[in-house]
Length: 323
Image 1: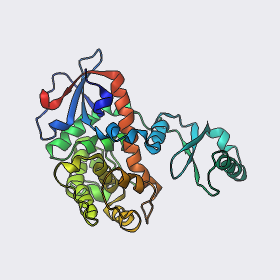
Image 2: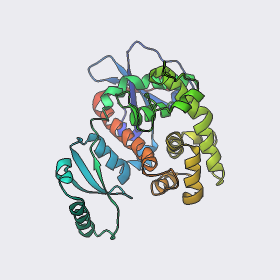
Image 3: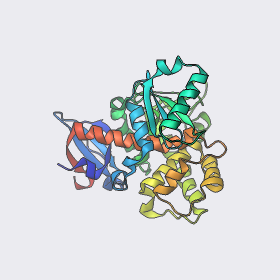
């Protein structure tokens, strides 16, 4: 049996043992594993950099990993810029305090942890009622198949599904809808019908196809264009590097204009890599704010969580290219 921690892959769906997958150019990136004491197989997309490059040791994804497991009646007091966890408490206990008491409590935490006066401290509630990873398993293999057939990197299918709609057909406050959280105008521009009679964003395969088209024709090319402004060239297999995939996710979530703005006016990168992403986490510009910073952190947290799940639930792990 292969050592999961050395391979670092992410579970992306349940399929029957008799289902044969179409061969495609992404086979080198895929793993299949059988559910223990079952005939069902899971399909994975490998993300070796997650552990090799030690993304798993960063405070931000580990903070979100804890939030994903934490009940909504609990909360974490944390440093806004680093996501260092300062204290765990119940939401009710926190909310019973006045604004003055909350600020006094935050000041006490600054003094306890030798933080500078004015250091922003957030209260973040648990979200295990939203992140129901077991429920999303069956849909992700479908997403991988749709993305692969349209020649779009299937890693994005697994990442977006895990972040946006883990087990539920959710609608955001901004109006994004469906398993791939597409805005109405974006969905229409990428081939879906969205009007008062029909909303094809709720159809999984159609939504996946539109999402893949958006990534393939807009997000990935735009990420390459923006990075190219700084002399950072992404070509060939470089597009499968984790840092670049995370950059593309920022474009998918915040839009190319906002990513261009924060890189041009704040980050001003001189090279790609892990440092580029962690700098983005500390940078704001225009509409690229806290939620935009968080997006790739959530993706990394999901990868870590799912890797742990697979370590418990699966065996008979094989590279798809060797089948």
